[in-house]
Amino acid sequence: MVLTLHHLGISQSERIVWLLEELGIEYKLVKYVRDPVLAPESLKSIPGNATGKAPFLEDLDAGITLSESGAICEYIMAKYAGKDDGIKLNKKFAEEGYVDYIYWFHWVNAGLQPAMLGSMFFDLSPLPEDDQTKAWTNGRLHAALRHIDERLRDSKWLAGDDFTAADIMVVYSLTTQRYYGPLVGYEKFPNIVRFLKDAGEREAYRSAMEKGDPEMTLLIGAEAPKQSILAAGGVGSDIWKK
Image (cartoon, rainbow, N blue to C red; front, side, top):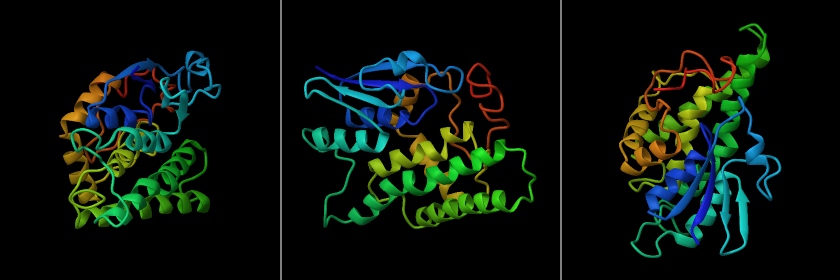
């Protein structure tokens, strides 16, 4: 029996659709629409997923259900990557690029994504632009963006010359997350722009986005959205559509 991936539109679960497309694994994709921002009841009704998390993976052959994109990514690679055609998307201990791989793979959810979310919430608040806490939060975000931009100045991909799952994990935070906020542009981060261009040209990325979010305009350029989905009242708006 194939894997079943429960995918919430315009969400981090795009990471797993992309991973599965890169690996060429057969899977069943079940799609859900936000209501109007949070997870719908249909996603919460899946056994084991009462909080409505997405992505949510079912591997019924193994009797396993799993949420959290990083955990799902590691599970799929441990079970499938490199088994048949040499596609692995990870680095093994002592292999060149291993330390960079594990660092950036985990840094995105420990560093970049929290920084993006912090700025997102402050952007929605009525605090003035010169509020000190808001300034600290935005400073943290731009420090994170400088950090990854500097890495990509001297490296095609985050772990070196090889495209890996670390790149898959990071791209969501730099792209689709901006539909919710922060409305940040990358004009000062040319290496991020180049990286997103390279990622956006991958056949598996295009295929994944067409399957998972076919109506969405891909945010793989420097320009930020004009308005957030949150400010627009949810996915019923057309600010994210092609």
